[in-house]
Image 1 (cartoon, protein in one colour):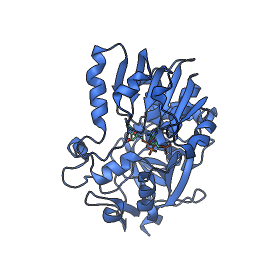
Image 2 (cartoon, rainbow, N blue to C red):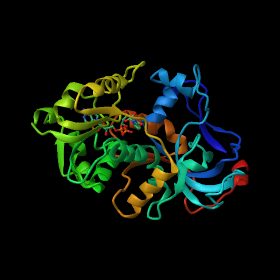
Image 3 (tube, protein in one colour):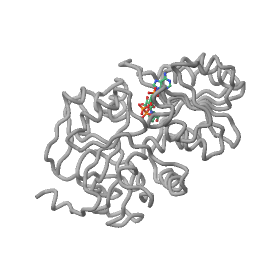
Image 4 (cartoon, rainbow, N blue to C red):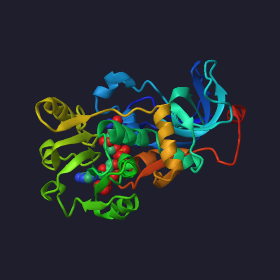
Length: 338
Ligand SMILES: NC(=O)c1ccc[n+]([C@@H]2O[C@H](COP(=O)([O-])OP(=O)(O)OC[C@H]3O[C@@H](n4cnc5c(N)ncnc54)[C@H](OP(=O)(O)O)[C@@H]3O)[C@@H](O)[C@H]2O)c1
């Protein structure tokens, strides 16, 4: 099968290669998936580049990546089942988290997959797992957003932010999204009640105090975030990119967690996890029309490096995906091996 592989950390154009490799073998609790589409997110760049450095200690591989095939998000069809898998059948169309999804086939733990929403194609479904689960967990579990609460979403036009806006609206919040001028129309179309263009207006100076702030971009200082938060409000720092090779922007998160026990405001962060229950919850939100993935561009497997460069350039509106198998074609593992 074809796959995007790397054997060293670095930038896309230097380390990624399209190669023929063997099909992955599956464990008892895994399935083999024919990949129809694979999602791209900032985490893919981090695992490709091996930055910030602490992720290398967290299991990615100290000097070189442990997993040769890149990619986590997947939507595809079940081709084979591990001996202990009882929740899925061969032929099911699913989406979720796989292990090396920029390939014709991938393996995935059955408990990180759910049935594909009926009203989505594979491309749209592949844009959901990491960003959608993170957004759901931010709104529901960390922000504990309640109907009528005023919620500020920073980075509202991005991969995670575009889902946070829609999920916060589904939870009944009054949503204000912060983004650049060029993406204001997108954030409005996602359902935001108010949109702040950060190049024209400073949300921290506007005098509004929000019940919940969900921050996915821009690295606003903790002091400024707190000044826009209600006295007993909740701040959830989901992320924010910096060029820092050691902390990669996580210093804000560390400061928020250290300060939180000493102040009335709740300040925190978390690491989002893809799991079957939250994917099912996302499927419900998608099928009821409350959440729709926004696909900016789809790239073929051979152009993964271009897709990663496009994401890193910061122009993406919503999500970027990689398209593999033709949705109308079947094609079993033997076809891939020729
Ligand atoms: N905690 C977790 O488990 C978790 C999970 C997934 C992702 N993350 C992290 O969350 C962050 C966002 O990920 P993503 O996939 O959504 O990235 P993304 O698609 O690149 O979105 C980031 C957004 O931030 C916006 N932005 C940039 N500067 C801004 C500013 N000054 N003010 C407001 N918005 C600004 C950009 O939009 P504009 O062009 O409109 O500025 C962009 O749409 C990343 O750091 C990622 O690593 C964390």
